[in-house]
Length: 84
Picture 1 (cartoon, rainbow, N blue to C red):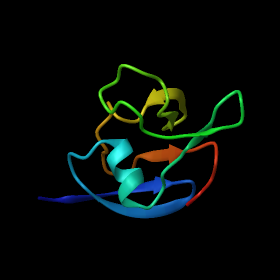
Picture 2: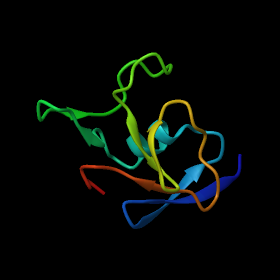
Picture 3: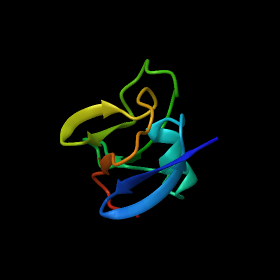
Picture 4: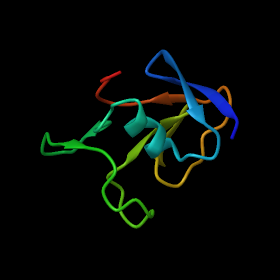
Protein backbone atom coordinates (compact mmCIF):
# COMPACT_ATOMS: atom_id res chain seq x y z
CA UNK A 1 0.00 0.00 0.00
CA UNK A 2 1.20 3.54 -0.63
CA UNK A 3 1.86 6.13 2.01
CA UNK A 4 0.80 9.76 2.24
CA UNK A 5 2.15 12.62 4.31
CA UNK A 6 -0.19 14.53 6.58
CA UNK A 7 0.52 17.35 9.01
CA UNK A 8 -0.80 16.89 12.54
CA UNK A 9 -0.53 19.98 14.73
CA UNK A 10 2.38 21.25 12.64
CA UNK A 11 4.33 17.99 12.50
CA UNK A 12 4.60 15.83 9.36
CA UNK A 13 3.56 12.19 9.67
CA UNK A 14 3.70 9.39 7.10
CA UNK A 15 0.45 7.42 7.06
CA UNK A 16 -0.76 4.45 5.09
CA UNK A 17 -3.16 5.64 2.37
CA UNK A 18 -6.77 4.67 3.00
CA UNK A 19 -6.63 4.99 6.78
CA UNK A 20 -9.09 7.27 8.51
CA UNK A 21 -7.87 10.45 10.16
CA UNK A 22 -8.69 8.81 13.53
CA UNK A 23 -6.53 5.78 12.68
CA UNK A 24 -3.69 8.08 11.61
CA UNK A 25 -3.88 9.96 14.91
CA UNK A 26 -3.90 6.73 16.91
CA UNK A 27 -0.92 5.42 14.90
CA UNK A 28 0.90 8.66 15.73
CA UNK A 29 0.31 7.97 19.44
CA UNK A 30 -2.40 10.56 19.90
CA UNK A 31 -5.33 9.21 21.94
CA UNK A 32 -7.29 12.44 22.42
CA UNK A 33 -7.67 15.43 20.15
CA UNK A 34 -10.33 17.60 21.67
CA UNK A 35 -11.55 18.64 25.11
CA UNK A 36 -15.24 18.27 26.02
CA UNK A 37 -17.26 21.07 27.60
CA UNK A 38 -16.66 19.42 30.97
CA UNK A 39 -12.89 19.37 30.44
CA UNK A 40 -12.52 15.68 29.56
CA UNK A 41 -10.16 14.61 26.75
CA UNK A 42 -11.94 13.05 23.79
CA UNK A 43 -10.78 11.00 20.80
CA UNK A 44 -12.34 8.18 18.87
CA UNK A 45 -15.28 6.57 20.69
CA UNK A 46 -17.68 4.74 18.37
CA UNK A 47 -15.48 4.72 15.27
CA UNK A 48 -18.48 4.63 12.90
CA UNK A 49 -19.65 8.25 12.78
CA UNK A 50 -22.61 7.88 15.14
CA UNK A 51 -21.19 10.12 17.86
CA UNK A 52 -19.21 13.35 17.76
CA UNK A 53 -16.38 12.60 20.19
CA UNK A 54 -13.71 12.53 17.46
CA UNK A 55 -14.31 15.95 15.90
CA UNK A 56 -11.34 18.10 14.93
CA UNK A 57 -10.23 20.49 12.19
CA UNK A 58 -9.15 19.18 8.78
CA UNK A 59 -7.76 21.58 6.18
CA UNK A 60 -9.37 24.51 8.02
CA UNK A 61 -12.82 22.92 8.30
CA UNK A 62 -13.89 22.57 11.94
CA UNK A 63 -16.01 19.82 13.49
CA UNK A 64 -14.96 17.07 11.09
CA UNK A 65 -15.49 13.53 12.41
CA UNK A 66 -12.05 11.93 12.25
CA UNK A 67 -13.40 8.39 11.98
CA UNK A 68 -15.19 9.12 8.69
CA UNK A 69 -12.55 10.98 6.68
CA UNK A 70 -9.74 9.11 4.88
CA UNK A 71 -6.31 10.72 4.91
CA UNK A 72 -4.94 12.20 1.73
CA UNK A 73 -1.53 13.52 0.83
CA UNK A 74 -0.91 17.04 2.10
CA UNK A 75 -3.84 17.04 4.55
CA UNK A 76 -3.55 19.37 7.54
CA UNK A 77 -5.06 18.05 10.77
CA UNK A 78 -5.43 20.35 13.76
CA UNK A 79 -6.40 19.11 17.19
CA UNK A 80 -7.54 21.11 20.20
CA UNK A 81 -5.13 19.42 22.58
CA UNK A 82 -1.82 19.56 20.68
CA UNK A 83 -0.41 16.23 21.83
CA UNK A 84 1.78 15.75 18.77
